[in-house]
Image (cartoon, rainbow, N blue to C red; front, side, top):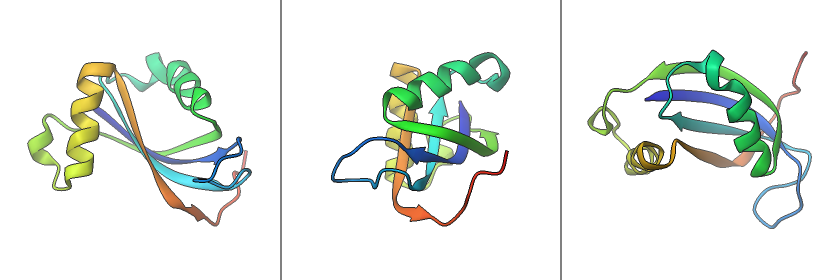
Length: 99
């Protein structure tokens, strides 16, 4: 299972996230080759209201037993069945995306 950690800008209006702010996320992908799935990742996150995605770190997890937090284990299991899962953190991060 591929794990991605990064930040993205929220682009919609809702009560959970502030439009235009950047938030950290962890994402799990059943497909482990990032180069092959990067466009699908962007579409998946875009459909959820995220843009300007910056993947900062990637890794691989063989099983949910390697994860210590129940939320991460749940996300891992969800991605096994549904290809992707994402956890977004509610506090905005103070950074600008530098292209």
